Amino acid sequence: IDIDFQKDKKANDNMVFENVMLLVNDKNVEVGKPYVKNAKVTAKVIDHKKGEKVRVAKYKAKVRFRRVNGFRPKFTTVMIESISGK
Image 1 (tube, rainbow, N blue to C red):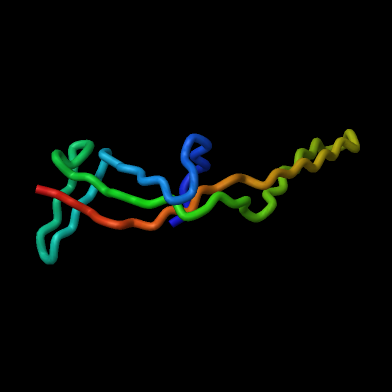
Image 2: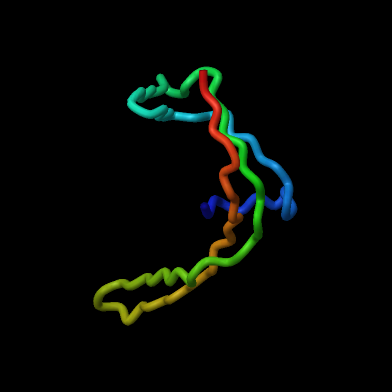
């Protein structure tokens, strides 16, 4: 899974997500208000990479104003190792 860039994490580091909004166990579905209590997701950082280029265009009619900027967002790739709940 690709998430926003985590500059403080290196490859093979572990991450714990404690703000879980939805937990599904077989036929049991738990929806948090806003988060599910005692639920954790453990993930392992695989790699950091850049995404596809995003172009941002500005245009003003009748003034011949045109600007195109672009950037490549950075992502962190993680692998989900375990999902634990109640």
